[in-house]
Amino acid sequence: MANDLMIKADNVWKSFGNLDVLKGINLEVPKGTVTCLIGPSGSGKSTLLRCVNHLEKVSAGRLYVEDELIGYKEKDGVLYEISEKEASRQRADIGMVFQSFNLFAHRTALENVIEAPVQVKKQPVAAARKRAMELLDMVGLAAKADAYPVQLSGGQQQRVAIARALAMDPKLMLFDEPTSALDPELVGEVLRVMRDLANQGMTMLVVTHEMGFAREVADTVAFMDGGVIVEHGTPEEVLDHPKEERTKSFLSSLLK
Image 1 (cartoon, rainbow, N blue to C red):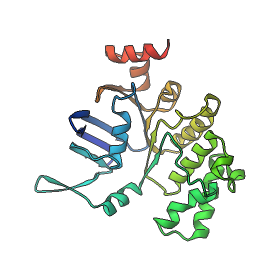
Image 2 (image 1 turned 120 degrees about the vertical axis):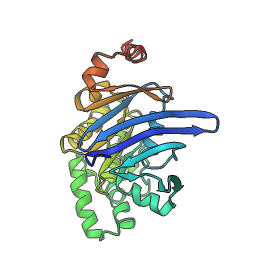
Image 3 (image 1 turned 30 degrees about the vertical axis):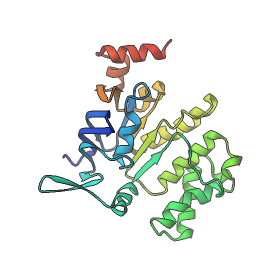
């Protein structure tokens, strides 16, 4: 695997019982790039994202992040699942932002952001607080550091969730439809933060329905349907000049 790749999915399958949700996914995400996964609900986009940090175990194939096999060790051609402790170490380098904000309701914005660096990375509290304030400022919420989640709008909570993920200094950020639970007028503030991250060179894999964001920010777009990548290319190729009928049908349905 070339060392300029952040993610490499090699014939990845994921099954839940008899249901194949991912059917031989091959995908490469170079470092410092943004890849957007688009497609109808149930196409496997979120499952693929969750496999990247081993929240879901792949059923077959291999997933690598920066040359490291995720979730397994290979010995004599046989894969062995790693311990939960080792999986947690791998996840510590991969930030993930979900649809629901998953903030600790009993902690302030600042306390939410410093929790993992202090507890997982054993950072001194003072250093973690300083970095957390920098991140809250970056997402436009320094003034809300002492606010509890219930006192924040959905867009503000999602921006705190992004700051919390960044506090671990991840090499990769995963976004699972981060704006889908938001009121329409709050979507822009979250996309602005993600746009800023992309401009800073953060490698990102984003499941999204925001075609404008995908067109503007993504380096590549992958259209998924039925557990496979149907079409993969630049935003212009996939969104403006799709070759596959399934892609054309999906995009036309969005315009109706």
